[in-house]
Structure formats: structure tokens, C-alpha cells
Image 1 (cartoon, helix red, strand yellow):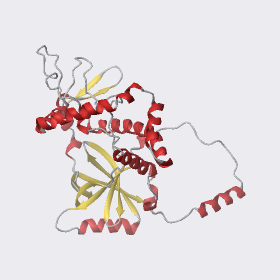
Image 2 (tube, helix red, strand yellow):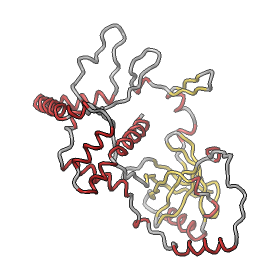
Image 3 (cartoon, helix red, strand yellow):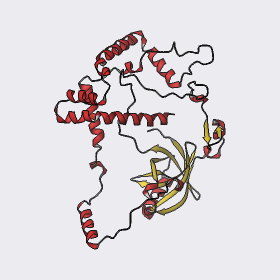
Image 4 (tube, one colour):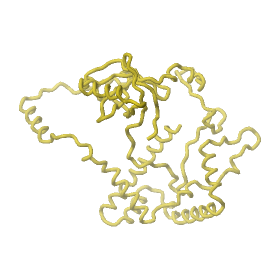
Length: 335
């Protein structure tokens, strides 16, 4: 794994050099969006509402809108803030494990000991374990000051971010007043006892993602797919240049990278892509004439054999929605 941060855990006069690694990953399938008629990729553009041009990342600043006025902050101004250079995880308090409300817990990270000796690292881990304490810490990650906790995870120290108290929403609802009888409590406790056991996360599976993968694999096996290169369409570099009047389209970094890759593939690959795109348009012509979602689901159901694949085809509409939301999320991250 690649470390995303390095620094020191500090409490009192003790310094523990560590590296920070992401502890979790997503098992969900990643989707992007395409046009339902010709399967062309759908892309989001960073367009300026004043000049109408698409703007590259290097010309984008952050801004805060208070309703009437907007304050623009440059990268240089943000880099001058003191939190930018903080490379310490400062322990501010040790509390009992049960005092940390799980609703406040956020992203998890693993901490790796750095240096020839890991004695200070092991000492801190053993101390937290033996005293049944959790360390409340503050640290800076990706220019943001964060609140977190240090916990013991097997032989490692784990760091989890904590939401700030102001991040929790105030609610104006709650259960109505009611009376619970002793008999009801006894029956409820008996039911809890029947379902009790030791927690083993390995016994749980994400059934939706498993069926989604089966659906994707089935469509690939049946040939119900299009050539990936064909979804990018033709190379429009000749149309994207500046027309000389200052209103030309600004090419994003991602566009430039994709076009460089396409040129490297050579003319042979380009002609193959064009044939694949033409064949794809021909094979999808009948589907394009019927744009209703119910007809598409019916076509998917006819392709499936057996009730299981029919059920999977039924979920394809949900998959499309999942794809849209996932793409939106990933776009924000990359931005």
C-alpha cells in the first residue's frame, strides 16, 4: 500500500513516528454514464457561467458565498494557513472506550510504525489495550484540521476521524410518550436472546452487489455489450481548437490525456474503433426507436433464461440508477 500521510503521534514528551494508510476500500462496482441511444460517454464540463468556456483545473479557485457577497480564495492563500504544515497527531485526552459515541465515527486508517525501533508504538498500543482507553487526537489531513480517535486493531494502531459536534444535525422529532409493560420487556429480551451470538463480519455478504456482478457477467457472456473505445466517439480535436475570436473551447487535462492515448493507438486501431462504433449503432437501431424503459426491461427479460436471470434483468433499471449516482460521486471526488 501507498502511505497517504506521514508524521508523529505526540503525547507529553513522547513522539511516535508513523505512516498513515487507508484502512477501507469499496467493493461496489464502479459505473459511468452513457447516452441510451448510441452508448456514447456522458461527461461533465467545468463551464464558467460568465464567459461560457470550459475551464481547466489550474484556472479554478475556491470561493465562499455568504448570500450577498462571494469571497475568492487562491491556492497560495490557502497554502499559507498554518494547518497546512502540521504533521503531528496530537493526543489531547484519553477516555474510556464506551464514551465515544459511534455516530461520530468516520473514516478509518491504519498507522504503521516508522524507524528502526517500534518500541514507542507498541508501548502506546499496549497501554491503550490494557487500560481500555481511547485516545482523542487532533491532526491535519488534506489541509483540513480534524478530530479523531486512536484505537487498537489487532497488532496495529488505528486512527478514525471524528465528526465535529457541530456536524450533527438538530432534530425536532422523537418517539411519543408510551408505556411499556414488564411482560413486553421480557418477551423482547427473550427474542434478543434467540438472535444473540458472537459477531463475525465474514458471515455477511452484500447480496445486491453479488447479483449485480452476475448480471454484468451474464450480459458479457451473451455478447450484450459494446466496444469500450466506441463509447468515446470520434476524435474531435479539429473542432475543439481556438477559432481565433477568444471564444474557443478550453481543453481539460482529462481530455488531453485521452486524446494522447487515442493517437498512440495508431490508425489501425482507429479504423477498428470506427467499424465497432458503426456495428454498434446498427445493432442498437431497433432499441433506439423504442425509448420507453418498460420496453427495454422486457427485451432484457427475453434474453435471460430461467427465473434467476429474469430477476437480474429486472434489476437492470436499478443498476442504471446506481450507475448515475456512483458516477456523480466519483466526479466530485476527482474534482
